[in-house]
Length: 120
Image (cartoon, helix red, strand yellow):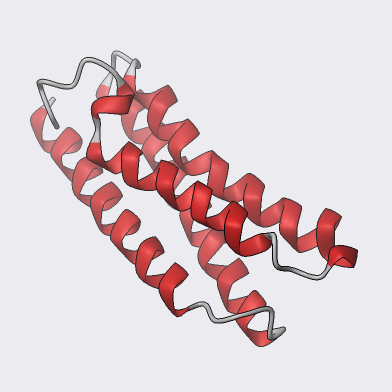
């Protein structure tokens, strides 16, 4: 865990997750308009959940609470992985770049959760 972090915004994992959300919004803006309230909304909701849960867990006092919120973030990231697979299968655009960003965020999140579980 980054001991010098004064807020969740100082965490590199949160910063990457936030950038992933922005990328998801840009990526889904190209989806067919008749999918606006289906895949687009679900994908965006799942993406937003990742940095939101990192932020919520940041201020929790117990290790168990922190890990709980990080696990929710990890689950939301896996949900995003599925939406990328689905978007690719529906030919809504290339998912290669988005998958790389998701993987990077996932690795950082896993590392952060491991550090918390070992250090508190």
